[in-house]
Image 1 (tube, rainbow, N blue to C red):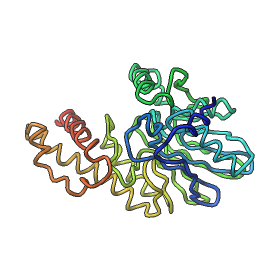
Image 2 (image 1 turned 90 degrees about the horizontal axis):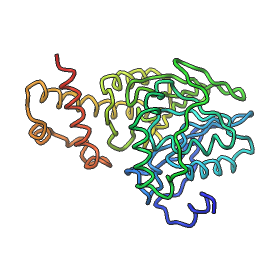
Image 3 (image 1 turned 180 degrees about the horizontal axis):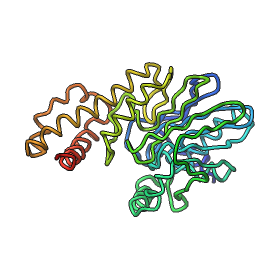
Length: 302
């Protein structure tokens, strides 16, 4: 039984649907949740651009089964093959589908800074955990896939007369963050620099550089933003500012506590989270985000 047949045979909380973004671009939206067997690790977004010479995909989703399903949606719109998959960053929910695209002949493009993670014990341990937590969608056949083309700086990908400007913006959410801008249709694929309508996952991010990167994105003449998580944005500046303001608030509140040697628990309890507490995943992610930021601000303190 193929992965697609397995997917059809099991109940899933959200069907994958391709939504048109512009004349040639589409995206699929994952659920606002932590990855699990129940949701197939379909917790992130992916996008694709159809050109006269083939398709460019942005991010590969969180399992080979999801990648197969995305390729079926693409095939409903064009008989042309996927030529490239551009990886915005090497987090599990964006890359476990890469092997399915590569098996169909697509080339993978990513920033060279991802090699450090790809070759780390952390990546292997994450994959081992995912095989248990997200079976059968992530299993012993799921593997980490390196890029066919590593880039170090701004790169332009031209396919079928469509220009995609690939801009490194890390270290931010990760060291290897890329954003992709399609100037002809004013669409910005922002990866996980933008979490729309939910609390971002901060993890070990360099939040100061992430804020600077968001300020840079505000200079793009984008009319539409496809975020790494959450619904399509047609209020680009507002959504960039929401993520930026959340990161700034974390740094201000936890930075003040760190400078004044206030214990984290007391600082967290005393912080006014009312602007963000009704966003999805607040209870799951906010305390962890705050704690990691508290530790970061301790290290940044003079």
